[in-house]
Every structure is written in structure tokens, then in C-alpha cells.
Image (cartoon, rainbow, N blue to C red):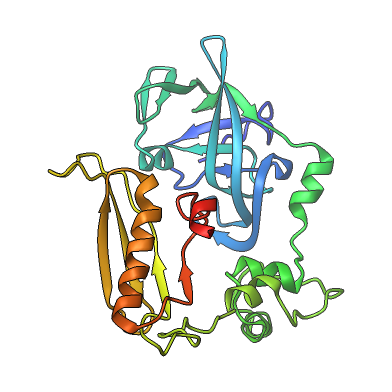
Length: 292
């Protein structure tokens, strides 16, 4: 039902318990708009919706202005006025209370979001739609996108898939700028598909002579000391045989002596001193005493 009195304009809003959708007659009131022509039943013989989107209505409640977003609002320019659907308010958890010549609409939390007063056989909303500037309206109305923009919007699908969507009209409102060129390469897609060779299971320069190359490192201190007062340990691993030995230290300064002792053991076992010792650049290894 809509008000048809001469005093009512297309910019006026009414709270309606009969309409199943919010209806707005003002094109530049939509903060976003999706063009889609469809027939709407139940409004006179019929009505034509040219699209839908979100409208912000500034509602006056007890001297204060409260902004309320009306989602999925139909754009029907031929309607005599705008309608706020009680059904949609109920879908979001709110409700409307009709009492005499007054209607109070509350949100899910129970807060009053708008009020209407009996007029012209309907409850006229005390508020109006927030209208956008002409420059912003023109920007929102621009629907043609380039091939690259549609490629990104659809989650970087193949160009052939976008061509099919456009050719077979499988997506409503999808229009491609004819001045743009079909996408041949996408930097994000190239980077996402890049691969690397797997790490080798075995080093290519591994030593083939026992005792020739030793790897070591220092670990600690531990939070709790051992019975012997040790707070650190230093492992030695033979690169060829992968046989390891772990020695313990009370202080980091003992690392030099442990390295000497292990090298002496290697020399005694294999008849020659290690050629290489591999470690990080910790000061317990990189010092004058160990170099000497």
C-alpha cells in the first residue's frame, strides 16, 4: 500500500507492514547500487525495479538523528513514495510497535531506531534518505570494468573463463570496458604459481674421509644445572660417518679445551688431525686461542 495524497512526495518515507522489501524512489540515495531490472508484484497492477542496493536513512528520534542502513532496498522510481519494510526489520531481529497514531521501530538490542506518525492512512517516517553528491553518484554508477579488474574480482580465474562469462551472459551486471585489452599475464598469478626445487636429501660436498670434517655448536645455558654443575653442552658430528659425541661444560670459556680434546681424539683414532671444523661465528669459537 502506498500513500497517494497530493501532499506526499516521492522523497517521503512510510513504515509499511505489507511490503516485503524496502523501496526507494531516489537514485542518488543509494550508497551502492546493483543494476538489475525486474518486475515487482503487489504494488498496483505491477511495478518495475531497476536495481537494488543500500540506502541510509536519517531518522529523528527524540531530538536526535539516528542513521539506519536499509540493505537490499529496491529502486522503483515510479513509486509515489518510499517504504520501509517491517518484514525486513523483523528479519534482522528488530520489531515495530503500532499504537494509535504512532509507530516505534526498535533494533535487535531494543534501541529505538526510528518513529512514524499516523498520516494519510499510513505511518509516515520522521526522517529522510541521505543523498549523495552528484560527483559521487556518477562514480557509483560506473559499472564497466576492465578485463584485469574482473579477473581480480573473480579470484584470479583464467581469462578464458571470464570470456565465457561475458559471451554467454552468465553474470548479471557484468559489463567489460571495450577499450581494455584481454588479460595475458597477471603478476600475482605468476608469483603464486612459482615453485622451487626441493632441498637435496644429502649434501653434494659431503666428506668421504672419516675425521676429515667436524661440525660443532654450543648449546645453553640450561635453566637447571646438572649434578656436576654443567650448564652447557657441545656436540661434535663427523661429516663422513655421522657419528657424534656430546661433551659438557660448566662455562662457555671451556669450549676451546673441548675442541682441542676432540681433535686430539680424532688424530689418535684416524692418524691425522681434522682438516675442517665447521661452526657458527660464536665468540667461544672465533677467538685468538682457538686460531692459534
